[in-house]
Image 1 (cartoon, one colour):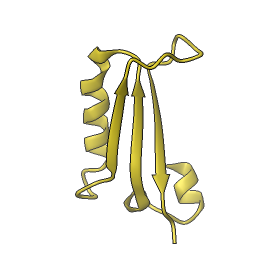
Image 2 (cartoon, one colour):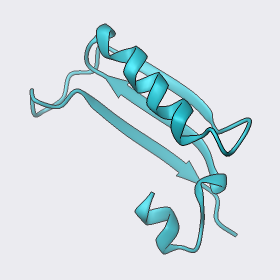
Image 3 (cartoon, helix red, strand yellow):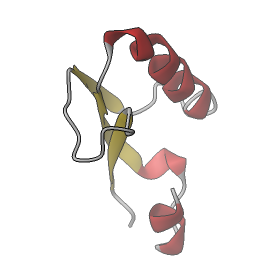
Length: 71
């Protein structure tokens, strides 16, 4: 979010989100967090969640990428 705001954007400018999740059991929490983040911006960005990601650092559980269009 900091990168979007640095360009003068807001969460309304986020068009797409990709969530890479290592474990199936973490998907509910990740989904809930996205819904809370986007609650004031219906309908929210397009979103894809990929389960079974293997990260370089085994302590990582989730990585989130967001594409924004700031005009």
